[in-house]
Image 1 (tube, rainbow, N blue to C red):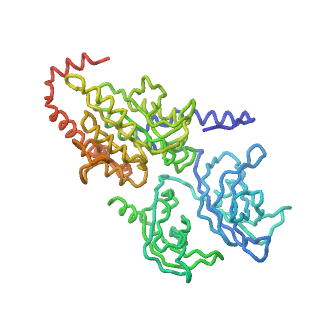
Image 2: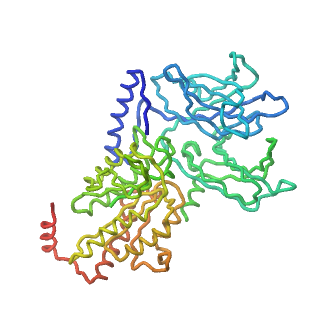
Image 3: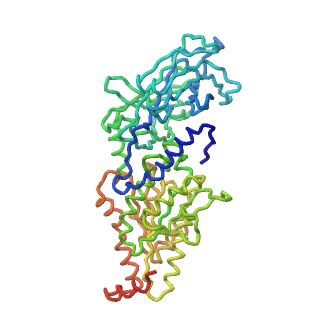
Length: 526
């Protein structure tokens, strides 16, 4: 993460104050799982729609895109831009602008509308269609701001822009959704339909608000649209029982899309359908840019991200069963300094000779410190970290009693890319004094992880060799975010006791009596 230097000393002092706050944001995470509020900072989602946009060419319709710019030190800088909607004079954009609102500051915004052709997405050859300037405070105070688009020379035409502000308060969680359809109606004569899906939130005043528009899948009656992330606040205003309307259209190049069908549901119903089905942390790019609020690694100045919530919740349970409370902590799937080469088993304290952290709080601090220094990359390979711990466990088997048992806790978003090597590593590790607990963070498809768990059958290596014993326990953290610590503890540690007993019984090693354990602990203590 890079920070551009500012010539304003007041800005530097303000940034300094925020960075100081950031260093202490996780102190109470163990008690609250990271829900903090700031009196001055509010996240706001901005929705944009335009009416009556005219192209320079009267015989065609424009391909409009809205670019959001923010003023800083007298200059305008691009913050984000919407998608391009082809052949449309009244675009309603599904792309949201998420911005930080500071009540005490004047934050000047500029919304520019450009006609971007289908051959490129650059602005150099795009036609400028108009702009609107205002402050973020104006939008927030009015909730809905509509103004004319001004062209060059500040002349107002017939086109207008509307910006709606919605505060992200209370529940700021994000969910990942994926939709597919089967046997859709064919609306085209010479080819199959080109379907896309729109999702609308039904508001209390009987109006409907566009939440998301998928991509178009060309020439396909059974499309599988790409998954997407959306805030729970945007999806259903934090109300899981709020009705959602989903409409499927057949895309046409002239902008007159054909209606295929629709259905209604709720987030609660969707969620119910989905739910039917040492420490290592995933730093791959599939988690998202840490500077983006949708990222599972999002660097927020006041509240922990999804990985920290899971780390604290699960780590606080596991650390009670560790004698010295020292945890080797590793990361995988990131480019690390100083050469920024990709690593799949690096110490997050950047001390390869001593990767141990003092307690879960030490792991949290090491994670917080290393994250801004990394470049999230990929692929998501977890076999190397399993092999790394297996090497230590293998060395333990060379001792007479093998008194140390290793438990590897892996936090990942679930989309792993080295399944064959991972299965091979687990089969090898099943002969060693170790267990693997995998905690799935976020809302991805965890079917691969559930296969590694082996609850539905015996896990085998790619060569067909079965595991000697079940050593993997998978837990989707999303199922326990609002559950009691006891419920989480039961799920995380449910299989570990039997795994430990199975290993030592298989080796014919009997448990020590209490006096022997006391003498051993005194000898091994640092």
